[in-house]
Length: 299
Image (cartoon, rainbow, N blue to C red):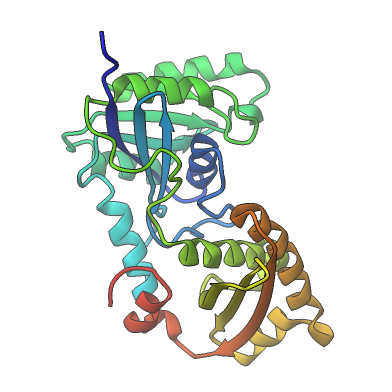
């Protein structure tokens, strides 16, 4: 009997900072979405693709739902999060298994009317005293909503992620594969390069730099010697933010570039020459055209 190909679009939804990006990267097997301890670092729905044995799963890592702010950037992030169920076969709400918050309930209330089955992924079980502690939590959430599946996982350790992938593959409906089997994301490489750079800003700066720090990849080309040549502009809102990002005698910017180069070379599979610039534009996150230019939606 011939093998039947299967295809499904899987949305990863939920409040900010529950580990959706880490879950996506684990399921795909490579980093396609930035990871930070700070919430709300995903500004656009990131797509990752996993193809195994004739089954293709297209994952959409939506921005975390959060209180709307005035910026065009924040509005686009919330629009992407709330529209994550459009054209979706399976919706996976990701939570921190240690607590169920009002934001978790709000996310459930938003997606519970969707036609797609709703799964619950209880992330961060590695932070529980023992895995047995997750059992009463599973019973509780099952009593509140008839989830199609409830799966305890740990994106950090990888616990149960292979099992989750198998469950999703089995639930995928028959269908033609939409992408080549070695494709990992539908987003342009240039955009993913910018996201890896932005991740290193967050990692190096911590709480010193605000969320409204954007990255624009102004040049991305392959040189004659096989190196990728990347020029990037970091957008800040104030001169003080620019000074903090550059650091004393450029030390902070150099550290960001050094760590980013390692990640970029791993991601691209080739050497990288990286040039970085820092510019100030007050209120840039309110500029819908610039927000779109950086890749976070259409102008």
